[in-house]
Image (cartoon, rainbow, N blue to C red; front, side):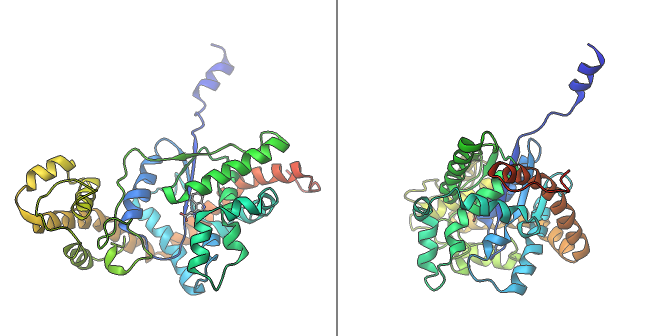
Length: 346
Ligand code: TRP
């Protein structure tokens, strides 16, 4: 092997890129932790991961400014406390990287009113906020497409509620590439192999959601007392048998999913072990598992949130790295559509 080949052999291979984001609007739930954050942590080993705090998406509905600002830092702390390593993955605020808004504008000009009108989330949100059906709410998926496409993302871990938005992102990217050549990587959805869907504690046929009343969800930052109280009051059924059957026994099955997702054993093993011991024992077990999983996260969160300087440093530094990557794609796009060259271009 000659010198050149040897060097090529030791060059680290480029890993596929993962992009995802969470809005800093409202409380994260146990469902977000089990369904998203925890998986994001494991993805760091195999992929180059970018985890954005999507504050620009958040203002499509009115936010209290002081609260929004606080929640952005809190979300950064939650990401890190969950195990996302800011030295390996990018954690930053969307609004700190202006390329997101700039690319969104350009992509707006490659997106049809008709396709945006079909988005079920737009229909739902405009029904829920009838007094504020703004254009941002309408073009929300275009900004999301910009988020994803700026980083030449390969995989996007999202829940089923975001699948339609990922589809339109792919459509916009293919449309653009069709006109200008291969500018964007076409992203795929990433559905994690493991990752139970966590249901509401009060209406276990429905997904656990932060927009429902307090008692229906466990917040990631809930204290042990609140966790104990909420699980104690969780809806079960009256046949008394501990069995996994989401159709007929959604409440009991949800508790079993939570236990199993949080390392409390295989569902069948848990059923066998707790057989005949009643729902009280089942709930105790679920409570123990949730508290054990969230305890270290809480401790780490408290430590981080007390150190605002550190958090600020992390998001500043990562926004800079993100901007470097994002601007590479943005410059290419600007050139393709025919914007005038910049004198100071590198
Ligand atoms: N729309 C997503 C949600 O509400 C958040 C989001 C914004 C996102 N941009 C993204 C998710 C890009 C994945 C990729 O859940």
